[in-house]
Length: 434
Image (cartoon, rainbow, N blue to C red; front, side, top):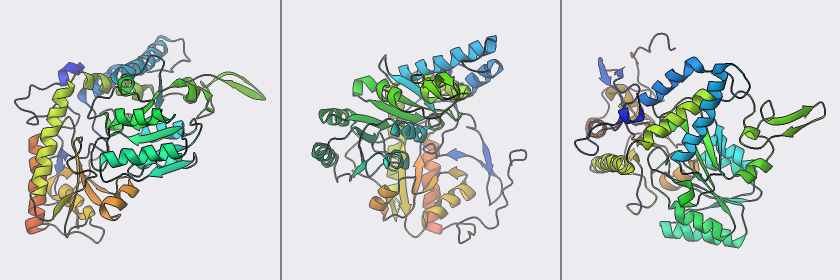
């Protein structure tokens, strides 16, 4: 299957899935008896694999061997595939010719690596995912509270960067709580105006919107394969070479060195400098396949599909009494296909368990690894997040809205424990997987 095979001839935006996903027809048991087609509205946590990605991995696996270290033909093939994956990723995100594509585990890993390389303070907003909060704390982290408008937020960042020089401005591309997009070109220009670089957490952005690193003026971009329909354990940090070449090796081990003696080592340059040990070649191949597949879908088609679904979801939920959507700048900016909401009288954990147990719908509940933002938007309490993707369609949105309506009007049909788990839970787990 090629990337183009994933496309579907849409009668209208949002009416049908945009791509074929593994598990799209999965049937899940319900506590009330019988089964239902699983509606996956948890893409923001981990997206299922594209069929094109699974096919590429299956094609690669017979050739899998040691990368960069073997003379056998499978090793030569694996090395070529691993390095070709970097080129596919670089092309997909519009990297500059001299940028490094550093293969890591995920966006969290990428920022922990970058934190070892930043030669100064880091400024970031309070709305960030923990992956873009916690790694900077040992690097002179300076937190700026997002304003009530985008303009006020930009002004606050400018004032902080003007007050005291910083090496890096680290921002999200799209909030993993509200889905709202930040103006990356403006932020990049702002950072550069004050002598700082910019690093973007693209974990929630790259699966939904095209990103051009060079055109936007970004210095670093991080994203995860498991959110980009390639759940095989790889992510990337894409960006400028000099800081990475000057940083200590992220891991000390084979492949990261030019020469080792009993008393010392001469380290090589990036990307090998930070990829000690046997790399995740399968994950890199999968991630490249996902990039190729998404590149084959016209950007305007994906955006129209998502806007239709998100608008339908937001309108359906806000029409229900007692349901509130969480937003940073309500209606002021575009957003990816993600909606976080609360239901009066029902804890978020109960809502999520109810949707799964009685309706076969998967969502996320909690504070989404963004505790400071939930402190601001919902007094630190938990909420429910529904996140859409290439495999989503209007029928999925309508099933969620109908299920929440039934909860608001009649309450759950099943009993739930103090921990909000269904009691009893008669759903059998798949044999062989547990």
